[in-house]
Length: 293
Image 1 (cartoon, rainbow, N blue to C red):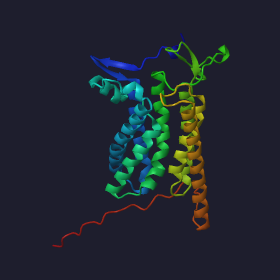
Image 2 (cartoon, one colour):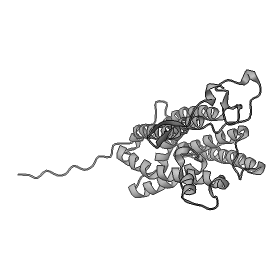
Image 3 (tube, rainbow, N blue to C red):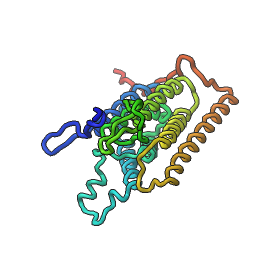
């Protein structure tokens, strides 16, 4: 058996408590995204404390929504009869894997809107900077799927193509399959660097957010072509629906980006800054008046 088929989802155990690789990668990805975001939003006068609160509000909602989406799409595996305590624990067991990013992103966006309302921040400007870092987090999280031996593609029967990272050996299936988790990871890393470069220089409000959704939907649509795994509600029609939906959303995002660029150009605004968009002036709090003696 190839070494890619010998991986285990459990990183280590302390007594009866086990820590999964999936959880380690997801946690590391979120922390890294937070650190990068904190550094980048300083130029729009958003403090590290503000960003920390944003993540504390948005991440739990994103995780809940992502898990909800996965459970609903695989409802036959979770909503068993009788639905007892063990079944409930299985339903919420995100540490064993099973998150649907397409549901998680809207959950995170709802959290961001709540945060913006509380702290009176421009959520679009913040999202333009933060969302591209989500691509990097998603790329890192895909390694959790590798250790869980999931998100693979079609069987690879040609011995000349049975090598990693082109293919991955799946122990439960006893054969080689396309390493689609790795393909998606590479595409998301490329997207992260490309969007980071453009967001830093292209001064169009809403570009970063739309570019993220467009890139992610494009990648997801491409991956649906290769995926071998399907959920219990994903028949052929469901598969095509997801793929078409992703490409339609991608096209809409591209169209809106073009519209925003044309609109700003017509209004005479500067679009591209070769050396980066200048940071906003610092928001200095008024100093208290000194008492005269």
